[in-house]
Image (cartoon, rainbow, N blue to C red):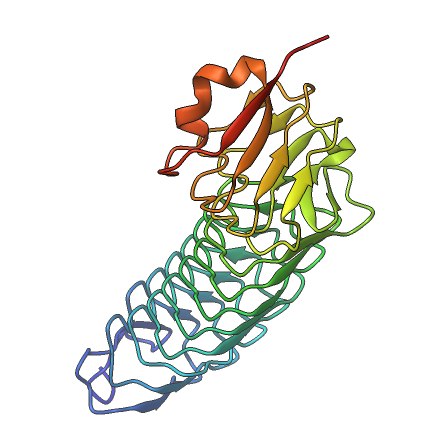
Length: 297
């Protein structure tokens, strides 16, 4: 131990920083290469920490529940474990440096004051729940290296107004932007071969599947393009500004809860084949809109 903190014998792995240690500011010894799982877990008195340039790995839940307001991750770090910064309620901004190639699930879950995140190159995926309930997050820069965005990656990021999908993304979960109540537009870089945006609305390429209609989109009346054959689960979740929609005959599949909580939706023109699926498509709407059913020619 050193200063009452537990390390391996050669001070290379920091194992445990006691939850009620008297340090509020701490500089990790320069010999440390690994910050162990839960090493600083629930250290609520810790407000500032300096990580040395030899550290290559930050373990799961390493800083979960601390009072950190800012942190600098050195370029030597290659991996950040699951829930590493979960529930760091005071953290306001962070940059993921170029050396990081792996980020664990729920890494920033519950960082309610986190406003800005910059992810530099090296990272290939935004994992499940990475920014779950980061309700102050206003901007994020996703690098061109990212190929997938996981389930609930930005769930309940209620301050996020826009997002740019890089050209290399090949997979986006249908819950990736669920409950992003301030989202106005989703822009896909033009060279993406799997997704595209039109009028700030997210589709798969060739406009075949409607993935996400941003809740704060400017359209109050919307006619889905006739190229669309499927609508993702919860695609129009909490689109409070939407009052009227036309669903073309080309659509043969509408996901569960696709129009859930669209409280101001008054009129819907929808293919006749969905007549018996209305409850599961418009599940949480107490007063169902007025429907007109389109019959095939």
